[in-house]
Length: 564
Image (cartoon, rainbow, N blue to C red):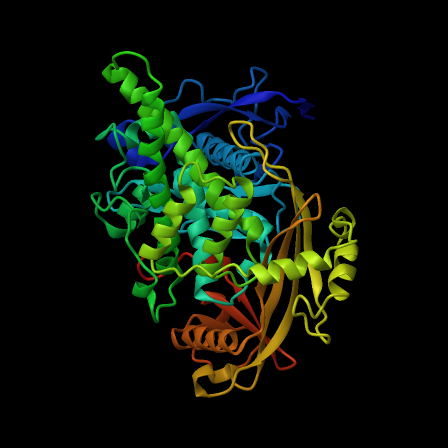
């Protein structure tokens, strides 16, 4: 039996990027300290556990054991290629990346709360060698991240569990599924694109938290980030492997200039993700030189080349931290379902303004410019609406209505007209929580109370374009998010109502999925003209004339052009 350790940190090791970057740029494994289970246990921590089961071979690899010196067995003397080819390091690598990335996003300067898993398991399961395939995915059903391996174009094995960006990206799906479970429902290309963006953004945040990566990113310029560098080039080895060209060393590029106008009539979620990934990188590029100049102004006397480099790296650290805080903190201000990019933009501006009324860094001004360049029109705030809701709060104890799901339900149920909830809608409160955030410099924004509620309305699918689904109905997810401070002041509202426009857009999206063969019916209904259900990216189940769509985790990231 493992001897339990309390609040003891062990030595974790991980690749800050991937094997291609390690060999090319010398970015080999680095160490960090993490909380772990106990002596003789495998890679197990408060948030994640390695279960190394290979389904293709029907073999479970033994976990690498934690020794009394708080290091994992057999890794101390390994380096270079020997380390990359060691199964024990694969286990430690994926576990270390997940644990340290979760600590970053749960930090009080970002989300300031523990991530719940949609699987309702206590820990996220990590499977480093799930089987042979050019893929990696998150599955709510298994509560796990599945990482596969395959042969690359140069004959070397490609282990996705060794790719920092891929591990962090798949973790992003798990994190977002825990925070916003209805974003995993099939409702719009923008919501699907947001899932992909979130994973890429988490990968950039986590990689820039490593000094070695920050130094490499600034290798060719001390004053600013180059458009393409090892941070903005996401999933280098995987991208090169699937394209068969080492110079094509990225799967997606954060330096892109993709706009909403470019995506008119497009439904591919990875294309949509690039708009927001580009915005994330735009903000990072803006903040880095600005912070660097501020740091250098405070320097007394002549500045050496070494000092200049030090300030540039320090500025990049701070810019990365601020970018992550701004872009991720806005999740609390987003709707519970069917998130569109204009509402995410509004949430970014409102969450930042609530936390920092004075825009000292010019972040909101810059974001407005970026949104304009990316062709995102930010909805205007309705001042009369805010006053109306604030008046309804007179005599209401926010501490009470935001304490339990039942109390929040009674508050909303008594005000259905105010919050546009149909009287016959059997809505549910799906989330009630509080925030207690703090900035890196110690400033504490107002504590927030968040209530999320949701209901479903049926949309009838009629016509030849729906093939086997014609005549059935599917749910349109409706609801909203309310944000208050602890004093009972109304801060923010976002609603997802049932509108004719949303019904039309949902039908067009489903028709696209049918036309492209991405839907497979599981219950024996024929005529849809899609692949078998087990091989399709989205499974459709028809019961009592109602369609339920469910993503096939194993297919989510396997498409013609190799998107992950």
